Amino acid sequence: DPYVYITLDGSDSQRTATVTGSSNPEWNETLTFEGVESPASKVMSIRIYDDDWGRDDKIGECTFDLGKLVATGEPQEFERIVDDGVFTDATLKFVVQTDGSWGNPEGGVGTLNVFVKQCTGLDDA
Image (cartoon, rainbow, N blue to C red; front, side, top):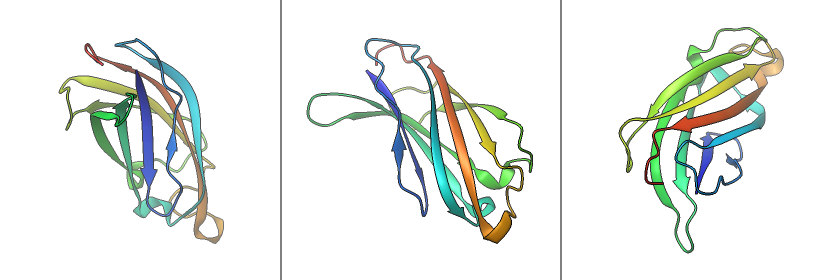
């Protein structure tokens, strides 16, 4: 029963809904981080957990350096291997969109939208 949990330094953490009983979950959910200061200096941490009674198990995680984003308002699609957990070949697909001035936004503060699409390869989650 996986869900995605995203942390970004200086911002409140966000999570998707839980997808029940799927080894290839599709969330198709947008998580918005507003007021991100000096965004190009941040690294986003993306973790996938298995929603369990009691303590949730970490399935895997990856990091994403926001300084690698192109300064465009167009959506930028990424695939990342989600390892450092139970699985070593799970792949997370997500889309990142900014206001186009990313890295040097007006007033040094920007908004980041992360559209969490899906993950494949979670055979036993």
